[in-house]
Image (cartoon, rainbow, N blue to C red; front, top):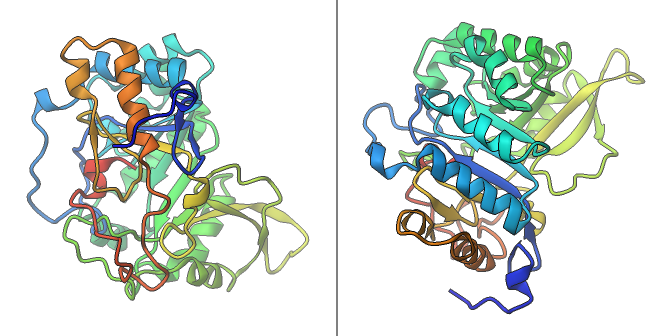
Length: 350
């Protein structure tokens, strides 16, 4: 791992390509109560043992180090599925108590969110991203291997009702399964004041069955949506966001903006040059890139008496070594420097 120049050691989570990580993604668990085909196998995963997962106090401490010492300006709680973590509300309360102004969002599948939305808001959560790939119960069950669409929809409705910020819906389009639903998903989202984000399927499935030919590209997504809508670039600055936003107008009323849609094109239109994310897995490993095969352990420092400066220094070293790009070219896994990570998305945290 390259040594940090003295100036960089005082400048937060900078890498050798001049990018500054200010967006922290913290995975609370590797467990999930769905089995999405693009993420997890139908059966069997070696879950982390309880003592391997960071404790509530360890997670709260890492967030404090990130914010107070390393320039983190926003936090996203991820999984697995964060809602399955029993002390979720306590974690959020503790973080909010330390950082009254920190934006804290969470990515969830919304199972059980209808019962917890108000409590999450009161604990200090500011916004929700919900993963939902289909509006049809049978298709939803095919993709997630669970028949729970009605519960997801109830969770989304509850989040909107209690005021959990702008609700964002994440959808992965799968060829021949739900790709035809793209316009319907847009209509459903904009008519309810949600922001839909289409996400290219990434090579992070546990079965390692991803293929470039099977993936719906960002260009294809735009064409699917444009069968019923007019898309124009959102004039707002992207400002390091993974989603490229588009203003949405109905073909029947092309002068009226009815909402926005985002497209996260990690594979075909990568945004590595302006990536500002730093990821901490549920067991306390830093991943400088979602597709990285290199991980840096912070848990051992947390559990062996290291002070905050030592933890911060190791975190900086991990991010200083962040690669320039993930190595995927635009035609698939043909780039010689890309190898699919061993971990699936559920084990990394998005």
